[in-house]
Image 1: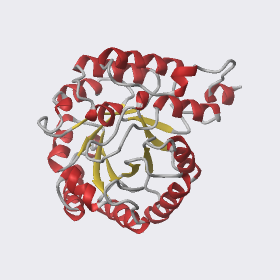
Image 2: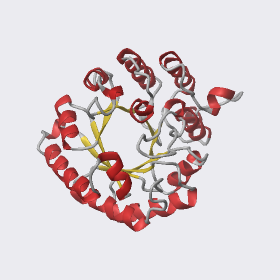
Image 3: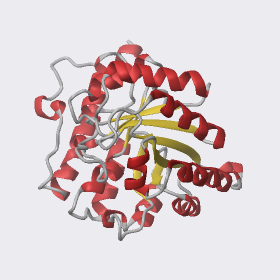
Image 4: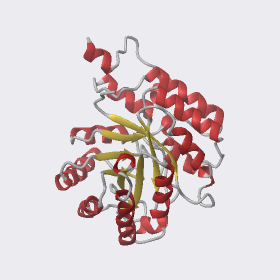
Length: 313
């Protein structure tokens, strides 16, 4: 399906990693299947980390295997290191999302190693991916957590973001992800950082990952959109937050982001009514967790027309 912007669901990973209640595998798969049917084209379904660190992902293999059976869905998974990447290669995941932090302190807290050690591991990961047959080789994404601010170090120099973005690109990344891990960003900062990165990495796709910790998430999305970014992470109900970043709260709400873009005439390929219905899975599976979202509260406005219908008229 042709669409102007890709909204990528990260709630299965970023959303659930901080939820203490284990969400049953069947509920995770129900969420994935129903959201894919609503038109969400890419879902980060899990993380390949040791279950003792994050028990929520003890079923990573089952979730990945079943998700790969869904026609047309790009199945992604987060990995912190080469061991996780190897697991993703063995399972046949479509996209491997690697994450390191621009902030040295956060990188040590999150993955317990220096930035240079993470970068060296990514080079090894890229070698593993290149060794795969081209037909089954996954897309390898390099993510730069805390690129727009760190709850340990505060402001993060734009020059550092650019340096590590270029390093990941040179190491073999097929795509980059620039996250506002703790919701420090504002639209002016987003424009500075994304313009600087885009100017240095050429045609390499650059995606954005915003948190709405301080209420600027959708404004930041628009700022990145103005810079030419066309892929954005979001989470159903606004779930999310890094457990190793004090003060981090949820991602931008998938439903609200899709509504905003569609109301602007930007085609996301998502059926908003069907997407809102997927929230029932979360209400059932994690009834004690607050779900956010203005669209869910107010509903679609009278006479709302999705972008695809406007373009066809």
